[in-house]
Image (tube, rainbow, N blue to C red; front, side, top):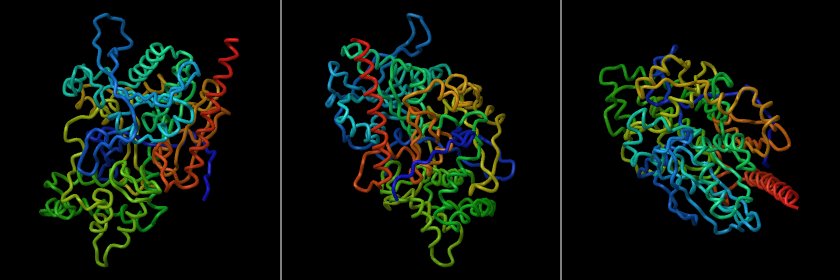
Length: 512
């Protein structure tokens, strides 16, 4: 079918959140609690045998910029750090022709991984004669303050400069300095970003309109804070993705949690589950297995692409469909947990190369996103009794706060993001103060519920596809791309072209 661009702004619509994997959020109606899904950036930091940093496909130079650690202090002795950025001027038409600068807002991970998985920016750069710039987010990849990850992540004193506000200031200072050095002050900057990077792109366009003329924010859940959206939406959307493929698959997963807990309580039950799921180490508790399974289902929903991919794990096209086929078509007499194992093995071991499964999500210690979730990125999440295939539970802010104090010695600020960037009454805010913004979303992506899904004005546009998953539009074009995806990207290119033409026309008039 062709592309279907839905105009649906559901406000408040949605969501859920990214909480710490380490936080203990109690369930009020079940002995099982769910691990909280993270964005995909964590996969850039920890290569495994099935998920290595991609081979470099695009031409760029690796450079470093001397950044202030605290942009909001004026002390002469404030520390500094080296921010890595990727730079390409291969197709740039230069300052005389006001060649644009395409800046990708770095996410919570290694910038090389994001660059290699954001083919759209590289592929359209020649058409626009654009420079390409991928600055790395502070405290991720090689952009570590205090000289090393160990020192940067040492405690709350060293981590306190890890925030969205500081990261946006990094981007603003870097591109301003770069333009000055290249005598390119008149060259327009267009922002790109996916997921958390998409949130940063949208916020930067609003916060620094004099620096960037427009922003493409793909899969950017900027409404996932406070009480703006229902907290159960994320898991309801994941569940709907499975239910649309197979009701029996949905039911099997929904019924599996009680069976899993019951098995774990038997004598030698944890040992039996360890063997049944091919785990490398003896299970310490049932919760670790619950986390492992629920993470797989959530990530499958995020990357339910219509073609084979190797973004997180090697996966076939329509991976949820394939997982449900495994669950539904297991051999006669298979138990419910055997069916679950057949399905989840497709996600964790599609290539058949894995001999046993490691459950540790972050064996090297706390991640930067955990800190961000414990300070300003507070996104409440629940699982509903009816609409979700996951075990039901309710978000508990007191438990969340206690977990953050135990992990980092800090108390989260649930209202800070909306104070800093807005979110409440977003439709009116964007209509009055926003321009030249694209919010692109696929409705298969469970993060889409926290984004903008309706056109706000002629220049704040929602591009929504019914079959799209997590920032699929930013990925490189492939021969397997369906017609709706080709059309989606063409729409985005036309909008960006309009921004740049309008900018250049106004700029020429202003100097005449």
